[in-house]
Amino acid sequence: MIEAINLTKTFKDKKRGLVRAVNDVSFRCEPGQIYGLLGANGAGKTTALRMLATLLKPVSGTAKVAGFDVVSESQAVRAEVGFLAASTALYGRLTAREMVAYFGRLNGMDDAGIRSRIQQLADQLDMHEFLDRRTDKFSTGMKQKTSIARTLVHDPAVMIFDEPTLGLDVMTSRAIVKFVRQCRDEGKTVIYSSHVMSEIEKLCDRIGIIHDGELVAEGTLPSLQQQYGETEMEEIFVKAVGGEAALVKALEEQESLEK
Image (tube, rainbow, N blue to C red; front, side):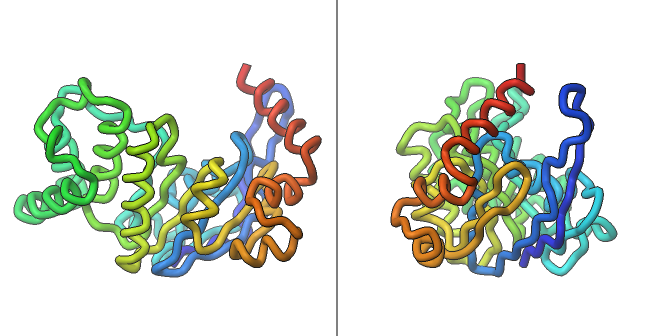
């Protein structure tokens, strides 16, 4: 299980001073469930996920992952979590098999366990064709599949996907979404972050909408449809963040910070 409890993270920015990237965010995700975190670029999704994965420390609040506190029991949390960032960051001189095996050893797995797990992941992600090729020659989709296998080689109970289909073609995106569903069916706790409305709508059991660092809406798709009087996720999202003007303003502010 994942339970975020009043998570807050601030950063200092030269232009805006102290920025609350995540502000008092609370939610929970149960085993066998996919929790979708939906928000525009710069809304605070990645910062929230990095705190759950112990890559960032909250300035206040905390979270529990698989029963362990992310602040006081960070090492135990890392053993239970697979965190997939949008960036693949693979070692180009290694093959996919070598890359996954390396991370298996980092997680304390023995050679027999690593071989078995690589076979399983290669079957699920359709990696056999490129499993023994160097990753510097890979397409974006091949790199992302290898990154997923590397992240999940130790078979963690909790999985966090941050924009896993970003920049991928339709068929590769479908394969990854199918794999995420399989993870849920295996009883894993899954957080799935995206700005793609259709993915969140079709995939997630519960949805949290994050805007300007705050969780502005949460619930199942039917409950959100009822609450906002809309059937399309895009329309629900626009209403939840305060309308199109508020969304445009937030996106413009994010673009100005990135320049």
